[in-house]
Image (tube, rainbow, N blue to C red; front, side, top):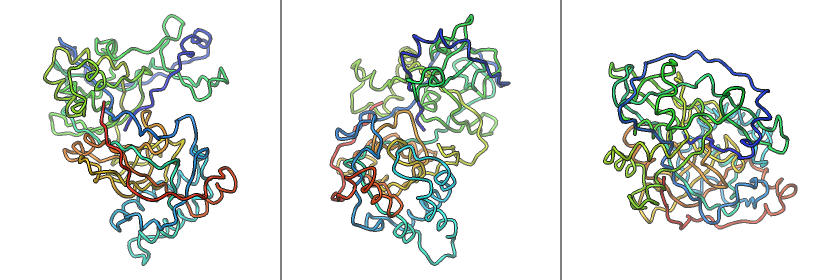
Length: 443
């Protein structure tokens, strides 16, 4: 899962004005004592495909300000299979408590709009005569948001080798430090609505938190923050990008960890950096290509990874799967990370991607549920699909960066309400067809 890395330079200029208002939350953490590697290797945040389709709407708008176009076709006619519908129904059912109790940031729906479908989903079970496909046909209608042109990437849950004891060349996996503080700047400056600042207090002043390079040099040593130590710093770098993963310890134990916080520093895509330096071809700037380059260039790898100042802290997980934005476990090949300004969290989304240029696009065709979000997932019809864990998941997620078409499934009658109220353009139709854009994966 990708991390929210937004920051505002105005916050830095004003930080001296807000220092007095902050208190520190003390966290009691412990684990392996670090033995600092002689040549420190850094770790990165997700070799994510970057640019969205050209026609994608500006992230500054909400979905309710765009064209919302109902399609005169049942959901089942999109290409929905019963197997896919059953899995999506289970995920939708788990999303209902959130859908019916939280405001929709996209402005498209109200909590009450979801009640009929959620009640029906609750009553359906394995012995019901109603099929999952019929359920989606009865309660939902497909609409396109904006032009409907989608750009889809993939994420997964990495498995990496780790140790409870530190050794030369190993990289510590840290919990959240007690001196990391965060504030909502709107509390002090109303014009900075939605802006946050993360940092630490130094001699009575709030300053930015340590960078990746500073952390790698040992500023967090001897503070009992280590969950474990990664055998391969490059693998940990990419685990930070994914946001969660499994630590396979030398004694056979498996520890599941998930995103807990981030140092507030800007995220830099190192794949793009390697392409700009001319050391890797654009077509090879996939996750696998970047990992290979880093392993083949151990002398340069640390500085390249440290160009990404962002650093992720983890927590141990007890749940059966990584938790998404709804605080429920995400489901392999069903859960999507979305931009909540355009796609209601918990809503179904149907994807049809262009596969004529090869790649992994065809794997993603079908019905998904919006259960997660990420800092790099911005704009209408920009999605990140979850593929679980293991070699197959890594292969599919790492190679997926495809354009195509997306249809948001809204409760029946909602789109008509948008047409008569918030959005007079809602009654137009668009032709349902797969997109023709080429996938372009870059880190």
